[in-house]
Length: 124
Image 1 (spheres, rainbow, N blue to C red):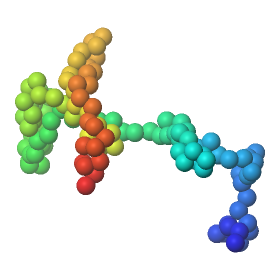
Image 2: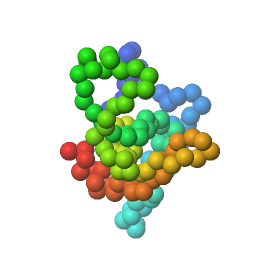
Image 3: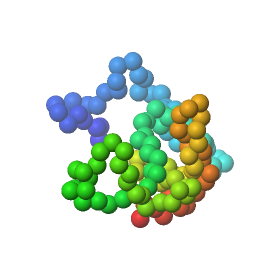
């Protein structure tokens, strides 16, 4: 059964300029004789934007206390000075690091990259 377009019931057609008989380079191809899969070309993932956050620490405060904040106010955080920072990608921890100064700008030196197994466990 041929696939159809949901809007007008016409058969799906490939985008202009593409050849529907070509095999996409982003698909998994397997060699049936060897029983092994070819490597997956994942270059199409390289341009997906991620929100990267460096978390220095956290705190909870009342709205009344937050409204009293002004220039020079100090907010006490849950982490101690010198403790490692969390590096998050799309709000998921991926590494830990420490603050450094590079050319008068703050930076983060990665000291530990969280293992794939730990990242998977963090999804639960």
